[in-house]
Length: 102
Image (cartoon, rainbow, N blue to C red):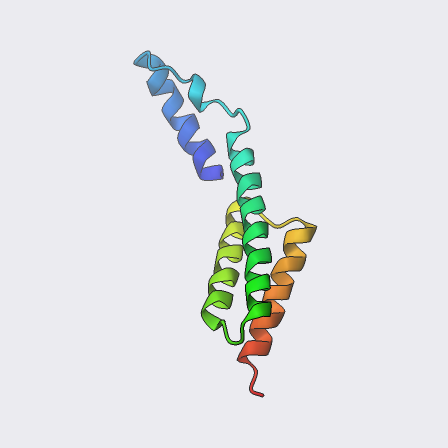
């Protein structure tokens, strides 16, 4: 997000000088809406992954993919809300159980 703000700040003067419209660059909450939508998508994905893991044995690939995706969303969104954190912890617990020897 900071990188986007820096890019916008450095580009705005030259765009204005060249009379290129800059209204689209103003912070209208698009970045925060993208973060919230990503977080919502991650919650849906983690819930579905947990349901799939309940139905089948194994599923190590799905589990690894789910943890990776949730972590990337965490990085992009700047954190997880309570529900998403609980789902992520469930996934991590399953990953630990799957990797531990029987």
